[in-house]
Structures are given as C-alpha cells and as structure tokens.
Image (cartoon, rainbow, N blue to C red; front, top):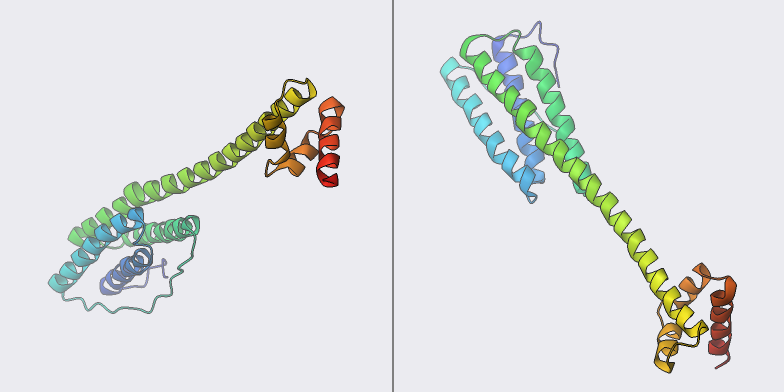
Length: 204
C-alpha cells in the first residue's frame, strides 16, 4: 500500500489509514484461534471504530479496498506475517503524521504508538520464545538420546562384568533400540559382547 503521501488529500490519507487498519483486521481474524492474535484483533477493531467515528465527524467517505492477506499454517509464519504488516503500518503512520494535523494527527499518533510500542514487541517476543522453545526441544531430544545410550551402555557393562541377571540380559536384548544403540557403542569389550548377543539373538 501507499506510503508516499505528498499529493494525497486528508480524506485520501484517512482512507489509507482505515484500509491499513482494516487489512490488520483481516490478518488477525485468520489467526484469532491463537491468543496473542485474538488480543490484538480486539484492540484493532476498536481502532477501526475510532477511525469510522472520526470520518463521520469529518464527512469523509471510507471505501474498503480489496486486500489479499496471507494465512500460513505454522505459528512462526503467522507471527512473521503479522510483524511485517505492523512494520508496514508504522511506515505509513510515520509519513501520514507529517501531513495530518489536529485531532486526526492525534488519532494517528495513538494508533502508531500502539502498533510500535505494544503489538510489535509482543509479536517479536512470541517469535523469539517460539525459537527458544524449539531449540530447547532439540537440546532435550539430544539429552534424552544420550541418556538412553548411557543407560543401555550401563546395562551392557553389567553383563560384561558378569553382574547381570537373566532378566537384565533379556531386557537388553529386547530393547526396542537394541540395534541402534548397539551400533552407537560398538567397540571395546562391551561392543564385542553386544555383537555376540546380537549373533546369538539372530541364531535363535
């Protein structure tokens, strides 16, 4: 949408503001099943209503433009769509506030500030938190895998030292990841023992 507003009338600029905010309604309506977007949507709707009320007072005619908005499946992509939209909106208000004065300028400043100081920090925080949670899951996955390997290795060592019961041996042989973990720890006495257990298991 347009951000070079030098040749626009006040009514045209006001229409652009309305359409920018209305585009936000469409975006956040698509995402409203997620709390952060639903919370922003409620405030956006109030902002659009303020624009409508002011336009009536100024006798401005508001016209809805056709907006194409993205509706991705994944939350990180939804957050990026929302952030990009808000950044575009801020750029518009930055230009508009230089040309609009009085109560209209005051309304634009309020909408601009809300986007800049509230929406964008919240959206960026949610995106960063999502990235952290993803990294945490990956780290936890590695830790769990290493923990399972260590437990498997401890069991195999007990067998190698002759400290294992028949139940310990059966538990090791019937471990769902026996082949995988056996490959991981292959080598040395334990590895040789695992190879022997594998051979005996295959011969049965």
